Length: 73
Length: 518
Image 1 (tube, rainbow over the protein chains, first blue to last red):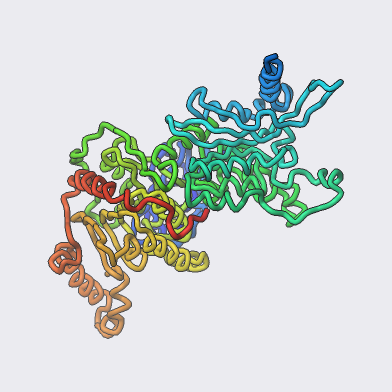
Image 2: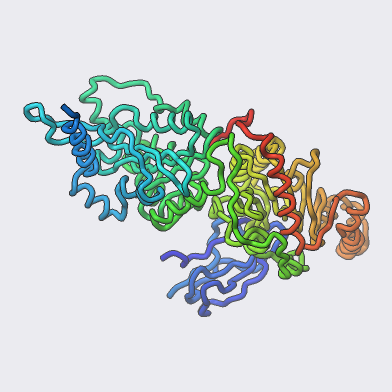
């Protein structure tokens, strides 16, 4: 199902994670913030669901398309 | 003796042609969620405006000298009107031999291309065919092979510099069909029911050993979202026709004509209060650039091209006081607005489109520079980026920049031709330089910082000192920027500019020396 895997839109560094595993999130809710080219990019849930896994930690470097969060439900 | 029997015969034959590949094939087409070529043409054009050419072309069956059946050519061609303006339209009929080239009789498609060129009319290609080579079964009939030549390709290429060309991918389209879709100023494909590739799954499996389905290989998610081979993705064929009509509404019929002006009823003096606080004071905070465009451009006039690829750059057509313009804007929500190879490629095509058809360009600038890092270097960002800069410097169409925030580096220097009059307006949120202060300090003051007892404190101290010099007012004092404006005045100023730009256009008309490429 589309929107289950939240991936990084581009290169950058994870600066803040705003949800925990098990949390229920709404469509459009901010899940984490990635800094790219000195801009804070909010990463949002494409659809509502429950956070099944968070695959990155704050401070971690990410590349385009890297898996960030898995949603279920 | 009148010619009534023959006139009746014309009508009978056109009725036979209207049956296309027969009821069973038409039903199969519909079952696949697709319209027939004749339904497509009818929905694309103004009602009743289609004038067909070559309707009588087909493979006949005669009994005792009388025609009993005819399989029409699988390419339907003619002229019609879109918003009252004449266009050439041609489409593959998938219900006859899968739209493949071996179902074509004569060079109907090539005739359409030539007609567009000689009559200087926009052309719309509704592509739904399995490829130029048709089927290898043809070889059994021909008893030979041949050196390939794309039919009428000289005209297909020449059209790009003279008239608007639109390609719609409306089925599984391979090879020549795919090339016909993308050799265009604007291309569109339908989610789920259309795929585009150089070669389809069986050929891919045989050639490179990859087992892949057609949707995975060339669905709209591949091209409209990643590869950029197709500009826009839509959810239905009707949306595709609406997109084609929308795109053409901003363009002149050819490069010898002025882009059409259309009343939008929007007040040219409209000053939006929201603009005063639109750019966050926190430099690291992004904003919704499409909302910014809505506040400035004529209401609901923005037609975005290529929304889902090269996403750090937003491109589209719009109106200001009814005048058609090309609009570019950096999107801080993608790569901070940094220009990557995909965004540069998108920028080249868009600038060329605007320059070819004399659409004045408005560039909303918030450019942190070319994308950096190993992935960006491997993608050849600097060379594609340099091509984008060259496109900007080669363009001679009127150009205005609105600097809403950052202008940094080589990419920043390529947001307009800095050596001409270079009309630009800066907002008070403007922030610019060859290098950003953060990061730049470490490079320039390394020895100073390292020699300090508290390097971190020393770095911050230098940054604070330099930061105070960052105000755009200091740049304005040195005439490094001509005007800093109240953001609320942006629309009135641009509406004044666009009228002046259109006064210049009549002298600019005609083909550019530099041809347009897909």
